[in-house]
Length: 284
Image (cartoon, rainbow, N blue to C red; front, side):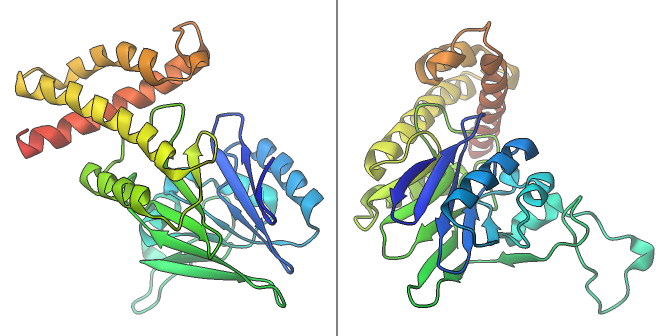
């Protein structure tokens, strides 16, 4: 676990994803969770060493970070996510049981109706009594349709989720590219941010982290746009993967013999296909 402020910490999971926590006088807020329930329990034990206070809520920066089993493993009563993140992880209501003018409870799968808290634009969670800490959650929607930031108010610390990746390529498979690029540009200009915690990679100065993410996106756009303009088929984006992997993947994942290569290459190809579809639709 790495300390980035007197009461703010983050941890790198076995899969390279960052998760965080904010320690308050009366409770703890977690930002994302390890996707593996066993690792989530180990993370909870690390948090317990910092504070014996309960976890009040877990903020999920995107729906693909949500995992009911991990949430149950840490014993958090509330999952906080954007409205659009709710649908993918909610068990559908039985049509025969739905009543007019009533909204049946929508439990996250496997949680037997645990309380949920969603928002459309922004939401603030308050920790503490004498020494108050505000954790602000704001919708962004570039990385995915439900992606958000978690900001520790007046601290300069922002958890940017998978909008930012350092040392490895960001996942473009759900991206709204135009919005994403605008978000990255705003991050880079924002002088109030001193520490940016990316979804993947080390926390640090925002401009450097943003540049690392932009570098991959721009390289991917140039290569895919060349295919589109040459009227090459969508399937040919796969040929771009080995070169981009050698340039942008972590060293441990650059060898095809590495298990990490297959996982990251599959993710990269899905992102390039998404990019191909977007550029083709725009006629670029």
